[in-house]
Image (tube, rainbow, N blue to C red; front, side):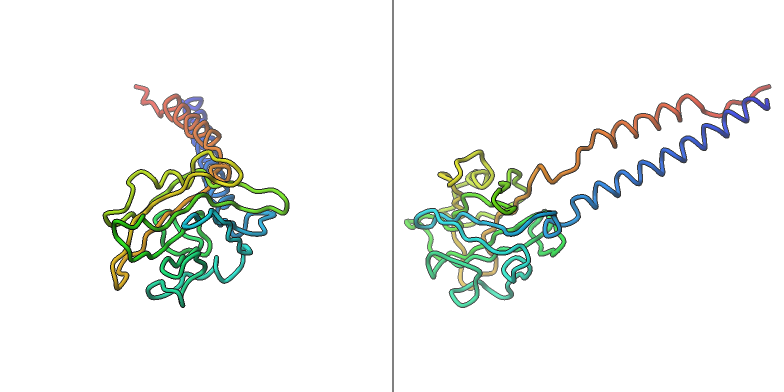
Length: 221
């Protein structure tokens, strides 16, 4: 009986210790990707836009363009950038659903474009790059999007994160908005290399499960 109680007590201590370690791993994983803006070495964010020729628009990582979501409807007077006055863009750090979040793990691109067919659709995004001095890291995960109108090409949203050349050759076509702009066209992306590896957490969960199953208290008659 004494031996059984000792083993049970020991197993509880081990499980508690592993649970604390698991919590620490999960918390550390979340903190490791707590904010793109805090990524070590990040200097700027670059957006490739293709309404005309495909052009880069680059903003410092802590610039007003990246750290502020523009209020009200986008317009030629209320935009972060555009190639054409009729197609204003807004870019910012966000959560996975495109809601502004200064400490978010995602970057969102929104646009307004008032022209339906036969005009081609708006929000023509080729790629998004994080800039680290002389090197860059391209977004490769599509999180969410909004395509609207009869000139939205469904499925083109994946072209914002496809494998492409240094200067992108493919781009999204997200459609058109109505006036007044009650909803913007949108693409939200992130970077798989900024996501922590889940293997260690999974192994720890499995270990806890084994211990719980192996050291269940038993009744001795």
